[in-house]
Structures are given as structure tokens and as C-alpha cells.
Amino acid sequence: MRILIALMLIFNSMAQDEWFFNRLLRKTKIPTVNSSAEVKVRDFFKVSSSFIKLDITGDGIEEYFRIEMVDGLYYVKILDHRREDVGRFKFLTKGHSARVYRVLRKHISKDVVVTLFYFFEGKTGYLDKYNTAGLYSFVVRDNDFKKSSFQRLTPIWIEKKDFNLGTYKRLYDVGSKDFNNDGDNELIVSNRGIKRIFSYDRSSNSMFGTEL
Image: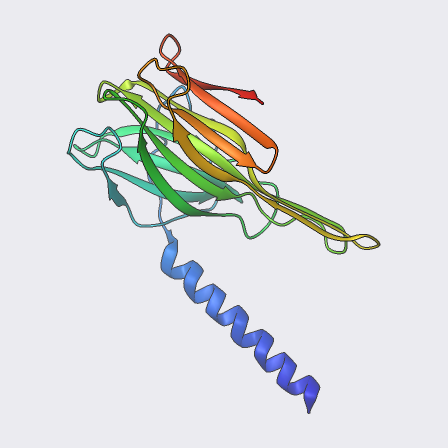
């Protein structure tokens, strides 16, 4: 009887997860986006979320993004306010159950906006595990997508499970502050004594990091 109840709970949990997955992702087929930031792939199987409106450039006009899963790998697809392609950008996918679980927009300065994607990079292993979530940035300057970049900045959550030694977890906080008084806020990713600072480089329109 106990075994039967346990199996019923497992199947119910799987059904709920599948409902959520199907609700979030729907099977679609769209043309490949021509972008230098995009990895060229042939799409054999693709599902995607609905497009979500977000003012990515910070000019008061909403753009669009959605999350796509293509042959087991995850991407974010971005359109401008006219629904024209900006690009499809790749997350680092390490295992199953990967997903974007938070999106946050920040003004680095008056003319620079960063959209942060919190991405769980997937479960690895069974008895011994090493799971991570990464912080990804999409930076735009002067409301111009030609002055934009997409990067994986750093892990923001780490879980390491050893069958003999137990489980180790570390969660990083994310904040911002103008450390050098240059008018651009730096992103701060920290946990206790560990602190990583990410600054915006205007010459490359990208972020670079240092560890304190």
C-alpha cells in the first residue's frame, strides 16, 4: 500500500511538472536569426515560451524576449519594439531541468541598461552532484542594439553534493554601486568574503570582472 501511494505521488508530481513545462514552452518553428552573437544550429526540436514585453533599452518603449529550448540547449531570443530580430543568445546548459528563473533590469548609467538573466544551468550526476546557476547580462547603450552584448558573468548559486561528505551550497547576492565615481554603476556579486565586481567597458560595449 505504501509503495502504491508513493508511486501515485511521483506520477502526480511528474504530471504537474509536465503541465508547467507545456504551459511555459510551446512547440514552434521560426526562421533562424542572423546575428553574430548567435551560434548556428540546425533545429531538429524546438519549444519556446510566449514573448514577454520588457523595456530592454530603457527608453520607455517595450521590446520582446522569449526563452527557447533547441535540441536540449537553452537560448534567449530578443526582438526590438518593431518585432524585428535582434538575436538569439545561448545559455550554458549543463544538465536536465535547466531554466531561467528570474529576469531583472538595471540602469548602470543614464545611457546604459543591463538586463540580468538568472539561469539554472541544469542538474548533473545522481549520487555526486555539482549544480550551478549563472548570471547572464544583456547590455545596451544609447538605446541602440548595435551597441549591445550578451555574456555569462559568473555563477551565482553553487550546490555540490558528495555521497560521502554531504551537501555544500553557496548563494551569491547581486547588487550595484558606482565604486570609482565614473558615472557607471558596477555590478557586485558577493558571498561573505568573496566579492566579484563587474564594470562596463564603453569601448567594447561589454562587461568585465575583477575579484576582490
